[in-house]
Amino acid sequence: MRRTPSAVGDRVDAAGAAARSVREGDEVAALARSLRDPDQFAAIYERHFAEVYRYLAGRLGPGIAEDLAAETFLIAFHKRDRFDPALGRVRPWLYGIATNLVGQHRRKETRRYRALARAGRRILDAEESHDDRVADAVTAQRLGRQLAAALAGLGQGDRDVLLLVAISELSHQEVGLALDIPTGTVGSRLSRARRTLREALGANDPTHDLEEGTNG
Image (tube, rainbow, N blue to C red):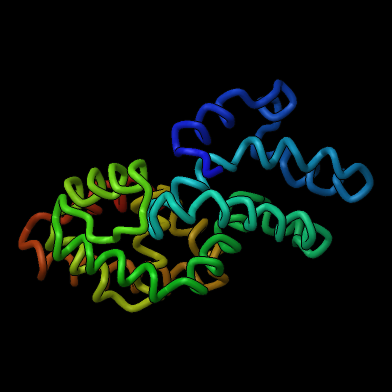
């Protein structure tokens, strides 16, 4: 039985004290310890599952997001021995895995934005559950038809950068680490994506404030 987004949130909000005690600076050490004691990985899962889920739901819809979030952490668990401690942060690494999974569903993502652009509040996918339709309707209301259409028209690389910033509020450096691209490339892709949004929406760029607040 599919869990609703609220159920996912409730589960993650009830994470144990071990997860809450893990600080970003300690996560690399926790990941290293998990090679000897796999249970140590649970703290990283509990700390980051909710935000990775929200990112995936924002891009592909809630119906598939929980499965892909779980797959993100399964991949991370199996590849934890390949994590480069020099990165210094586990969070961008997780988002890189999640974004790669989004890339495997790029047609679904584009279709979703086009459906939102056509329908506005009215969602056309008859196969979605009631909860999914409600979530998509809220998304459509928030984004608006023009923004959804603009997102559908972005190239994959530009969209990845824009939505890592806009949904998950990653810094330019974190986006670079997640996508394994130079920080300068992050900036150029983000500028190009925002220019596309401005052309579609006029002066109203809903990602402007987020971009300014996360470019450290």
